[in-house]
View 1: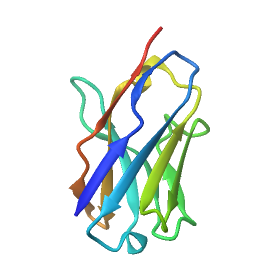
View 2: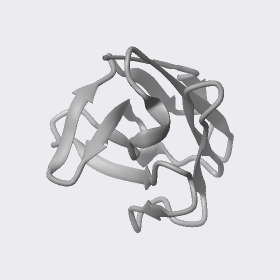
View 3: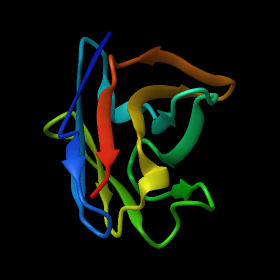
View 4: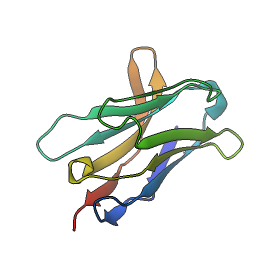
Length: 116
């Protein structure tokens, strides 16, 4: 199983970024996928989850209305569109393959920094 994130970077408050996570070596379309983030000195937290077919999504309260998770099962990719970014969104963002009990595989992470 391989998960590779991309799309992080430095953005000003109020700006937008789209993260991508490309999966390989497993049947992507049969697994739910999640985005997590970890800020310095804090625990990793769940940001959003999407079902295997993409019909069901869930978000942390802190990102509802600003972030959108989606997936393309042909491209084996899950996305996180992040709008109206705030300094408190600064973190390393990870994608993970979701199981009923948590995440069994992680990507290497991509840094998102929101700063003026």
